[in-house]
Image (cartoon, rainbow over all chains, first blue to last red; front, side, top):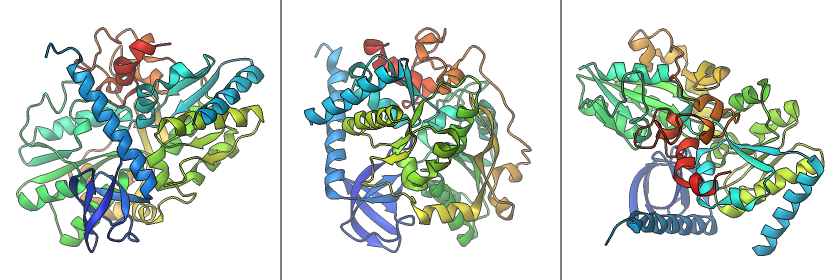
Length: 82
Length: 357
């Protein structure tokens, strides 16, 4: 449940932001990380930015998510005759 | 990378040799549990290094009494229940929120969505099912603050928020505990900071290592624990320092401290834990579902035959429960450790049957 996804802030007004994670856009709040700026990468949990992360850390996680998605896709088709 | 893995494994081997017995490491984070299985880490470490899946999933530790109250509230036509999706399938005494088939039960992605239901339905009381560890609590508190600011009278929270450190202390105080060290949660630690584990290190002399979720972090986390055990010391070490600071997220901590306070509360399997649950402070009672609906206390109840409690304490592994993979599967879960994808039983079921030991 404590899952968090890194995403880049692509719009920011007050504590309302839009963040981009691997092409998905989310409306989030930056109330808990008032120091973040446009273009920063943050970890998002339950609609809130909870910490700032650097580019490298974010890329590692995005890559991991992509691998998991790919594995789950394979798993799904494993028993399928198609 | 291979060199790092080799080094880590060498440390584990030395620790096993030095201890001359099993080394029991408890992870207290559902995402770690899943990541350990997904990456097959159990099969790569020495047989004597045992990984115990502790109370790391907030859904799993939410007690039956809490869930039954939520299901009861869902029967009221003047209420809207706003809940994170994780809670939908948790079984209560008579079914779950999902099987209640009530249209007033709404799945939300954030506390802000719950507030939106309150704004759009002024004639209903929106009850936000506020569960989660320190990672999730600040989102609830921001919603309460916002409701207060907007003067929203029809928004309340039902707090089942839990605190990780008191639970770790309760586990170590247990008679049967066999825990040698903790692999501490990544995202909880972002909020509370790695120094939050200092009391455990000082009081119980057990290593606390904060790790991220990538396989290398987990392997090196286990190795760091082994290093401390070899050197007969217990420290807080943070390997996830890219995002976890020693002091944590102070903005979030201040917000939570303003609105909530620790109270004694039930955890599934662990029983009543002193100061292990968070409740709204008396001055914010108007936003407290317990006050609004006159709920005096959340009763302790357990599911018959389900051994989730012992599993959460690290006393048995899921296959040792008689219901596991028989009456209790992810499609027909009996206990919450099977319901949540981050639960120990669900992870064992999904990944462990191939690599069980």
